[in-house]
Every structure is written in structure tokens, then in C-alpha cells.
Amino acid sequence: MSIKDRTALGLIQAAFKSGKLKPGGTVIESTSGNLGKSLAMLGAAMDFNVIIVVDPKVSTTSLNLYKAYGAQVDMVTTPDKHGGYQKTRICRVKELLKLHAGAYWPNQYDNPDNPTFHQNYTALEISHFDFDLLVGAVSTGGHLSGIARWIKANRPTTQVLASDVEGSAIFGTPLKPYLMNGVGLGWRADNTDFSVFDHHCQISDQEAISLCHLIARERGILMGGSGGIVVCAALIYLLATNVKSALALIPDTGVNYLDQIYDEDWLSSKEIELLTVPALLNRIRIRAAKI
Ligand SMILES: Cc1ncc(COP(=O)(O)O)c(C=O)c1O
Image 1: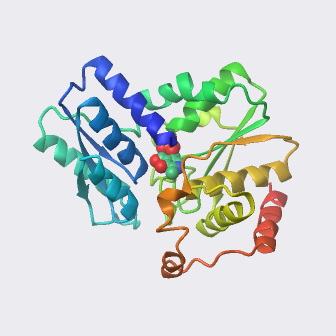
Image 2: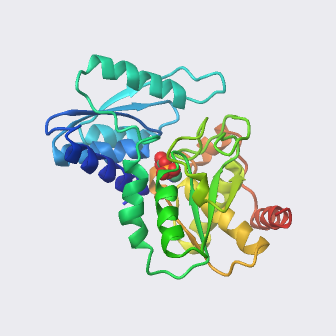
């Protein structure tokens, strides 16, 4: 179950409860891949239609899953001036909402139902673990902000590290194209609550992908690319600070990216050369020394 399955459930349950969505109704949402899969699945199970607005970065696996669940797909193809598609996708959602009267837009970026679900439910899934540092990835910021709110309310000495991909603008750096799917954003969404983050850090595509390959081969854990970001950030802060244990929230499985970050042809088409283990560890040590 991916982190976005939880987000989707929270958004849809709240929409049904408030009456914004009715059985047989239509949900329209912009997604980089994962939330769309979750909404498509819930649409089939909970009786609502789903229109998913995606862009060319979406994996073939995700597209096939949408179809398998009977969801409708709308693909934008024009990047914005920074080479990203998130703004274009949201404009398309707004157009579609005009064409489908009464349709519901969960708006995962700004809808407080997103962090609230994670604060009330996802946080409880990790509440029995002992750790000094919570590390998560951000895009809408919904899951990490929600869990971090619970942490700050219940374990105020535990620190929170928000990690993101290099090139994303969430932490105020200029927006540049990046490969990672799911993380990053061209702006800061309302659901990203800086007040509950103690630290933040950015990891490059190359570092995250190299770490995903390392963990798959050495530990038998196949993470999605954002998991590589989270684990890389956790290692840097474990080395750099007096934190003794970290809990890393891995958003999804690498099975979703077998045709992307785990595919040799895809890597060479994107000019990504995997870092050797010593080179990656050295990179992590250098990053830690700068903190
Ligand atoms: C794979 C993956 N990682 C991380 C995130 C970031 O989660 P959030 O939007 O809750 O910040 C997402 C969100 O789409 C995702 O799909």
C-alpha cells in the first residue's frame, strides 16, 4: 500500500462525508502517477468515476493500471517555461471541471483533508517505533506534514527532516527539470507545513537512483525513487548530527519503476550513470560534512 493510497482514501472519505462527492459522481485530479492509481482503484471499489490528468513523465505501468481500474486518462503534453508539467496539469484540471459539471477536484496540494488524514491515521502506524529523527519526502507535503504534526504534538523532542529532489522549488531554490517521479514541485503547496520541519535537504536524481540500486542489491528492498531520496537524506543526517536512530518513510515500491529507474536503457536515455558504492558513500560523507 503506497503512501498515496492513504492520501486518496483520506481525501475521498472526507469528500463523501461532506457531500462534495456522491456515489456515481466524478473525481478529477492531477497526478504524477501514484495518487492517480489510488484514486482509480478507489473509484472502482467505491462507485465514482475518475479522470486522471497526467504528463509524459508518467510510467507505462501507471497508465496500464489506470486502464485496468477503468479510469479515464487525460495527458497534457506542453511543459511550462521551467520544463515541468505540474502547472499545466492543474490548468487542465480546471478546464475539465468546467466540462464536467458537479465533478469533484480533491486538490491534493491545498486540501487540508490530505495532512489531516495522515495526522489522524498514518502517524499511528509508526507510533510504536522508537526513533529520534523522522525523514520523509515532499511534493504536496501532505503526508509528511500530517505525520510531523502528530510527532510534534506527541513527541516534541523528535526531529523531522523533509527531503526533496534537486531542481524542485519547494524550499525556495530555482526550479529546474528533474527526473524523480512523485517528489518535488514548482511551488510550495499549502499542505507543506514548514512549521513542523526541523531540517530540509535536497538529493540529486543520480544520488537517489544510485542508492535505490544499492539497497535493492545489498538489502533486497526495492524502493521507488523517492525512497532513495529519503534514505540518502537520512544517512546524511545520521552522519552529520548526534541523532542515533532515524525512521525513513518510503512512499512506494520500486515495482512501479521497473521500466524507469531500474531499466538500463531508460537510465542511459536520461544520461544517468550509477555511482559506484564507494563514490556514493563518499558523496554522502561530503554532504554530511557540510551540515
Ligand atoms: C512516490 C512518491 N513519493 C513522494 C511523494 C510526496 O508525497 P506528498 O505529496 O504527500 O508530499 C509522492 C506524492 O505523489 C509520491 O508519489
